[in-house]
Image 1 (cartoon, rainbow, N blue to C red):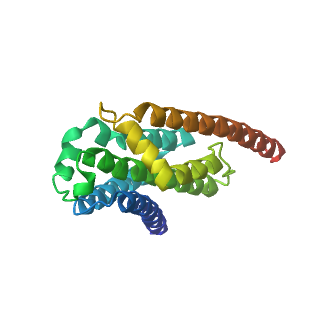
Image 2 (image 1 turned 135 degrees about the vertical axis):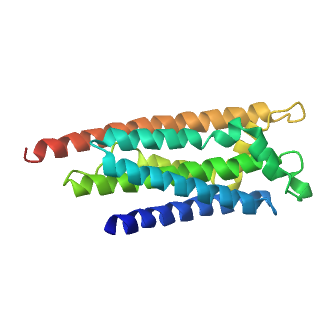
Image 3 (image 1 turned 180 degrees about the vertical axis):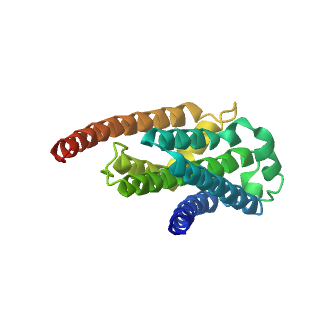
Length: 214
């Protein structure tokens, strides 16, 4: 019973984070009736993800199992990009004239980014619970600080404009190359920050493991 409530709490926390991100994106692009379907998709995805983590945590003999589950779910978050029919079906419900022509890009962002955040939150919480249950060290090499910075860089008007313009490549988008360059530069900086943070966290983790009794 305690495990059920624990994973239910993880689900609710991840869903709140995902919806906050989705609302931020939806509010910026002034999405309309189709946003209800986006919420439904995110809720289903988050529920399926927490079930996968719950099963994985019960059967995992090592962290590799949870890591692989997180990786597969993160790849699943990119499904809207590779399945235009789903995005197109949701876009048919859009009645906002200001988003005409870019509905698919907006809906893709509204699903993909929050879904990735939901997976990240669930993985972090499930991993921490699994380690603490075994009396292990819950420190991870994952660059959480860089992740927060990246989320703040994306979920703001400037970041959303750059990403949307980068994804919406067309002959009419004369500024595409500029926005793509900015997006690539920011991504490169974040990658370098992540590598540095992973290195620092790795050294701290090794010291903790070396200091702990066998």
